[in-house]
Amino acid sequence: MRQLSGPRQQARRRFLAQVGGTITCGLAAGIGAASAASGTEATSRRSAERKSPSGRGTKVFLCGDVMTGRGIDQILQHPGQPQLFEPSVNSARTYVELAEATSGPIPRGVGSEYVWGDALMALERAQPDVRIVNLETAVTKADSAWHGKNIHYRMHPANASCLTAAKIDCCALANNHVLDWGYDGLRETVATLRALNIRTAGAGDDSVTAAAPAAINTSGGRRVMVFAYCSASAGVPQAWAARKDWPGVNLLDEWASDAVKRVARDVHAARRPGDLVIASLHWGGNWGYEVAPEQRALAQRLIDEAGVDLVHGHSSHHPRPFEVYRDKLILYGCGDFLNDYEGIRGYEEFRSELGLMYLPELDPASGRLQQLTLLPTRVAKFQVTRAAAEDAVWLQETLNREGRALGTSVRRGADGSLTL
Ligand SMILES: [Zn+2]
Image 1: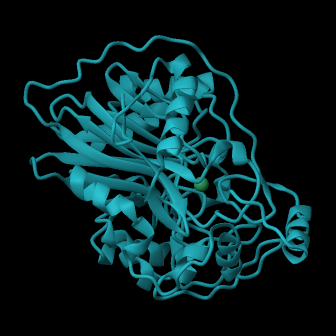
Image 2: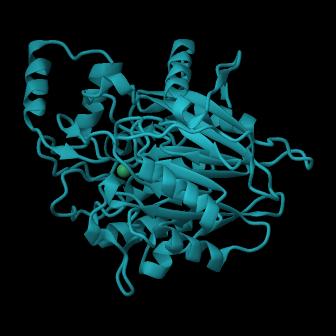
């Protein structure tokens, strides 16, 4: 990213940089972020029997955080109230200005499709059966920001058509931003998405609703079941946990001895023969590639003991390594896919403007991974664009360097896509 220049901008950056502090998952101008997870463990990947005799598998589109609030909300057709309560920024419009200082002019009043940019054509070509994202923002007009939290994301409900523009089937809501604008904000988020026929998982009116999976019927007559959880390690306040008669998110204590049992119970209660089960987990810090042995053990146990077919991890601001365990895909961190962070400095070495569209194909009968395609992307001017060749190379080298310990590597095709 280009450095801001000029005395006024430098002064502003100094001002923003003076406001220190540590946050997890939310990014604000001038504020640092949490440290990386640590620890790793070498192992070898079992060779996957990738091709099913039945031919095409169930193709899933997955990505990490989709944060269409704050600055992005301000350039869509129905910008909400811009007021913020951050330590150094009080208007969402500031994030548009910061991004423009980095990337050049950004249009206002853009249509619903704008933010997806090249991703729309890529999805059209890939024709996934199911499209799942982690929606890292509230969708609401509510104006009571959650006290004790520095960063609050919201998108005006009238802008939620940007999610249908990409035909998103399911939004995971178990994360550290869905309650940024309180319980009214959560209720409006769920109601807005439901009205658009987008399924949700991971948050709701009580603990039963928050834990309920989203069921998506595929054209192949299968159901894809999405169970969404979030953890304190991703900065989710304990107070946000849904309770018996209290709304909130589906908080999972990932280190509790009964964490796997809890997921297993949820899966067992809802699964029918032929279902594919995805566990969507908002977990871990924002920066760093290493996969802690405990996190790895948990992911593998979800496959061994809870019947999960694919682990969809997110929270990191950049793609983390992944692995194939007993022929099942574990994505430890899908990275940010879309956000308004372009003008924010810090952690440049992780290149969080680069992302990936994950397109795994699963054998419908067994849930085994048949093939995996990753499409490298780059956010510029609040729009997802296809990554340039050198950026795709950088992502490939990073995934291969960091994936070595997990036994994974990717090849780069002539079209820039990465395949396992
Ligand atoms: Zn987050």
